[in-house]
Image 1: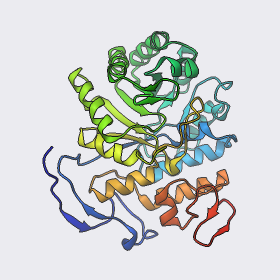
Image 2: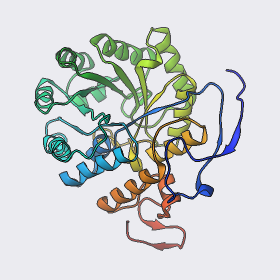
Image 3: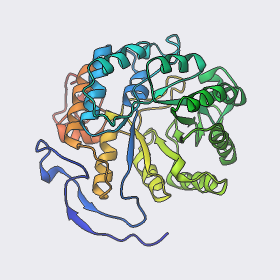
Image 4: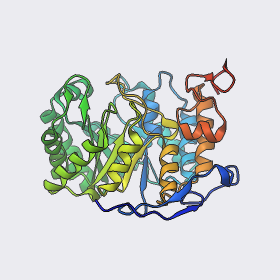
Length: 354
């Protein structure tokens, strides 16, 4: 890898900003060679984030959340899931959310709203609502495949085949998720060839983009480079890949930087750090979108996201959920308690969740 070259200046993060975040609170930009000029953020908060909440968020709040995220400049927002309500009751109102967004648009015309579709029944529901982008959700490990889908890895891929085929024949874009790419709470470290095999098979099915998930947050930068190099050797280039990191051990941003260095230009994140995984209890929240935007802005990488508006949105959603945001950037810029569980460490006193 070439030695980094630095060009330092004080600037606002790429994209528009609002005066509610003063210049002195924004990162100083210092670019590094070998990084992309722009990154597309795939926002997963309304789906991956809210599906892990113990309480069910009202439909109108979900729709408002998506509108606010779009207004902040996010162009890809995973809206909901057509998984059976028995498995994910938090998203049982999927059709109602999409209908609410259609009835009161309030979204830029270019906003992409993918939905998770587990099987052909889910695809039928999505097609009936005019969805243009779907995602299927697979696993690199057998144990998690059985826990999450009730099937083996082979059986799950067989289930996805007609979904992907019908979706592409209908002109839809298809994303494939691969969970447990680096570690599994039951099986331990996941062999790289095992991950490569599942990614290749999803690509062969016809998935346009494949998201590599560090579901329990155990990846480190070296492991990220190792997997991406193996995928490149298998003919799967980074223009078909996205990175999806969880922050269990505080490694999500360092792993993201490693992925960018290897050529990734699409990164999944969740506003306010919402999320986890209902089938893997060791999976904590996703990489917070605000923390990602802060880092990318400091590197001079364009995202088109208004950081101030995004922070406002996460503060608002934290209020809806009854607790402070888990995002360090939100807590820093909005003056929220530094402990996401509600302990105000600035004064040493307990404070109610905002």
